[in-house]
Length: 261
Length: 284
Image: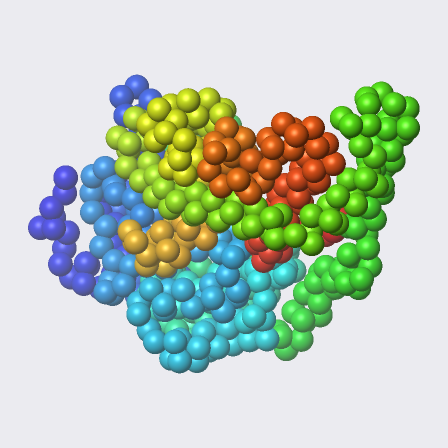
């Protein structure tokens, strides 16, 4: 176990998410798998960090830990704000029995916000993702991209300063994904969100991130980091994005090759 | 700009999902196969009667039975019987629902109870309800209580099982999403687990009703001394009096009641499926 004393106070104070020696073992005894091994990294407030790694590098485990849905085996995780971080999955994970407005309103309802205020806030959230006319629809009546937008509006309703995204656009077609990148970029700038974004799509990471962190697989460790100094708004097909993506891809290949996959 | 592009793309995807069929066409599409099947059944019955496979006093013609049914519908005896039987059914079923829901929820939540009772509930379900009657009669004599006891025991395990499988099969992703959105303990049950389990619970309730109805009929056949007008008792009297038209007319009444209640459950099931977007739109 690490103690608070070992972390420099100034670093902890500045970071929106601080991970210090985070280790996670799944299972017990001979079946135990080391998913994360002493992971240490910081995410600054307002920073957009993309985590890239081959499958099995514990990216999703890491997000579950930061979201507080699971406990690390050892090490510590600190997150700013009095609200737990908002988490978005590859699947929209919308509640099929509820309308779009009901889904988006649930985090507000769980916080005890009265109905009238909830209605205006839900309308605002839906307007932020351009779905205001779809409030009364049910999830199955929407397209894949729209559903993921509803999920985004729902997580924004948590009003957490930190947003965790687990390959949120992985199941979408390229065109829809491109549009959602633009929207996410705009929302993050406007709301000053700190984002930890997991993806295996290196171009997506270069398109969105202020910083790209490459994780090794089994166990997950930080093996490479690079800052993305491309002015926003960016385009996924710009030469600068392609250059950074190529660089990260080379490192990723070397890592995957090392494991003989 | 973004809105326009999206409505363009999404409109394309959404357009194919509009299935518009008129209400009358839908009702007709679901009604005609049933009507044909009914006509066929009555036809076969009539053929058997005309072939004299059984004497007329044992197997009367459909028209005779229809006439008998019409006659009986004019008298309060039939309606008293329906009222008595349905009252027993609903009281017993309501108690079974309360017991089944509580039991299912308790077994789903409490690990020790699940280890102890989980497989027992399934075992109870396989027990034919008529096998409970000798014990029920010993415990409660030939009384309303005996009938009530067997109806509850027949229906509650199915309902508990429905709750159990509903809670077990809540998609883990929805649980994670719910917890991240701030649902804990009771609110997780209220906003995520209960609605997610609803289809399985309704299936359990439907099966529970079928068991309650069968148990009740078995009970009324055995405990005829009580409530002479009960539908099950009428069946026994009709047999004893060799009154085949009466017997068959009563059976038809029992069948119709079963179908009506089943239709109510079917409607509830369809309403849920439509809301969830899992309804089969190709078949009405």
